[in-house]
Length: 313
Image 1 (cartoon, rainbow, N blue to C red):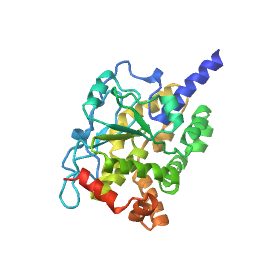
Image 2 (cartoon, helix red, strand yellow):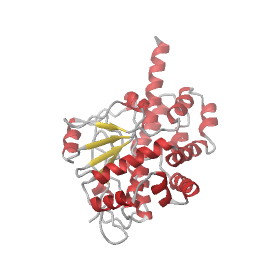
Image 3 (tube, helix red, strand yellow):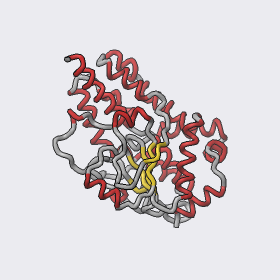
Image 4 (cartoon, rainbow, N blue to C red):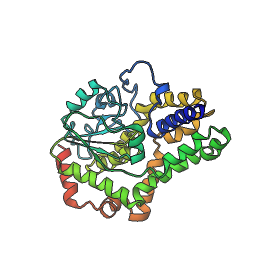
């Protein structure tokens, strides 16, 4: 019985880490809405809408945002209320469902792989709305975490995640956004959905920072938002997730699973280096960002024009 309980607790903590969520035994006694960031991240000075205003405050998710509000190169603005980005939606409260229903969504795209859905649960959405599963590989992240944290061995954890290895693993994940044909197909399908949809749409992964962050970066660049601003939106996940991720690290330490939970910080964060890795791979394989869009994702001029027409004005 003791072994079974230990394995269960370990499994909960590991899945929580992989999924960006807190295990049940470490969750706060009261659910409170996440606070807006105290200061906008760098790179976003050109945005006419503040980060606090862009956030959709929910109790069961911390990184839900309207993609609109940014200025384009030609002085236009990305329309608000058309596209939303999010982290996991499986823990939404009844009050959250009312807020989400008010967004008028007609489509929700879930980038999570089956293992994530299994451990974290299916999306909880307003009545009449079902998620579209569009999994993008985690490149073995879940298995990596299962091995490292499940060992409870600080030496093994240091060997697997220390000395820059965790960050190197994340760079490998970002390379797959460019190199993996299945991933490219999922990103392309999502961008086409946005171009063709006349109703609000939301896409999400688990933490709302990597797969979701890359999709948003692509979208903003496609409709004419300056690279510096698109990168700022990507990096803003660190601001929204900071307090929540810190609680997770403390829970792993208090639960006896990690002596040095700071080893997982590179897995929790987004970094300019990760984004640059994907862009460098796009340049290497396709001659640049534009080549990745047209050759890698197969987006034609008509789709790009439809995106611009739908989102900018």
